[in-house]
Length: 145
Image (cartoon, rainbow, N blue to C red):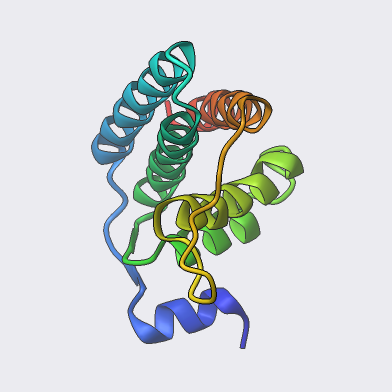
């Protein structure tokens, strides 16, 4: 059984009715989060740039799920669903980096259990997250019409 099957089996992903209206609303939230990330970057708040960039990617990915008629209850499952279902449709680097940013966001917000130390984000990492979120958002927007 693959990761997506397990997500459906455990209820972290559920079938629903496709809803292009919700997909478009999620795109708007993604755009707002990206705009927030840009503001944070301009203010040299790299941690919050990274978090907002991931939030932008999350909501763009969520738009795909709404379009497909899938509800999510897990960031992990959302990332795996998009990576599997949109391989060959969306550039591979965006699919891989969505999950990497998910993990990075977790480390930034919560740290790790060993040292209880949160991850630091530098300017280059924040800039990379911004570029990835914009590219992913643009790719998803082409699929949500």
